[in-house]
Image (cartoon, rainbow, N blue to C red; front, side, top):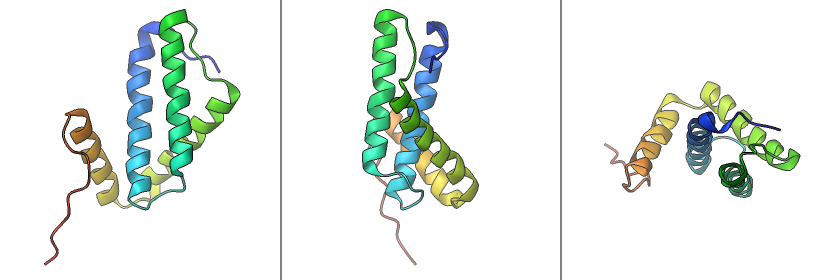
Length: 112
């Protein structure tokens, strides 16, 4: 599946990785159906697309990579409709901490 040309590639790379990270964090919190193996394989497939694309100018997922990432993106989309707001917010906050170079592990919350 071909992707767009190189000028938009960096933005698509960022968006796909943000989607992957949020799906991963939500899965770690017990939401969604994505497994660690699926998330890892999809991340490797997307990384390969951008590595090859930067070198050759050809941007696209093979059918197996497309299926992997489509499953993650579909799962993430469903989670945006079904997961509690606190879980989605927590995943976004973890991503923000991760991109800022801080610890992205969920802090232990005190219970009253």
